[in-house]
Image (cartoon, rainbow, N blue to C red; front, top):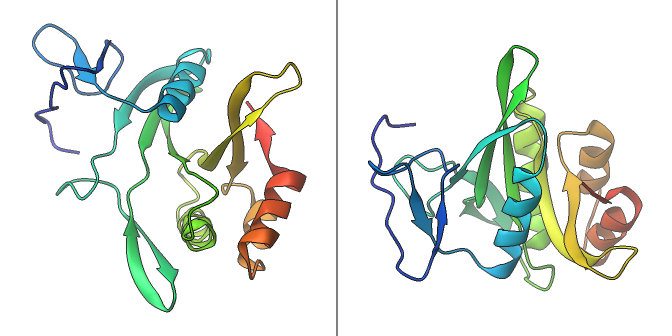
Length: 174
């Protein structure tokens, strides 16, 4: 990552103090959609949470994970990179809240699974959907590609319906 990044201050955003890149006042004004806000709130509540980064779509330094759809390779820019404490060091997680009705779900899931296979030193690599928990509150429901059993199931999926089944069998709330 570059040492200095200009994070745009979005006037209708929320003021964050735990974004990796902040201004001279220690803040970043960032606009997130409802799903993204819920994911960040969950992450901030973790004991091992340090900070987060909004991965800029198509930014020159952004994390880009290739995936295939209809035989064409496309770029995926996961929404968030999360920094967590891990023993005496740090680990980076890759999180992508994603609408399950989009046609790119299976392609992105397989792309994330392949990225996880090739990068075992990365922490959680999650495709996230929103779903109601046991008390009826909408919460992030996560499928973690850093787990080999999940990756194997995703690699064998041939349709979004099959991916939905993997979410049902292996997805979890935090």
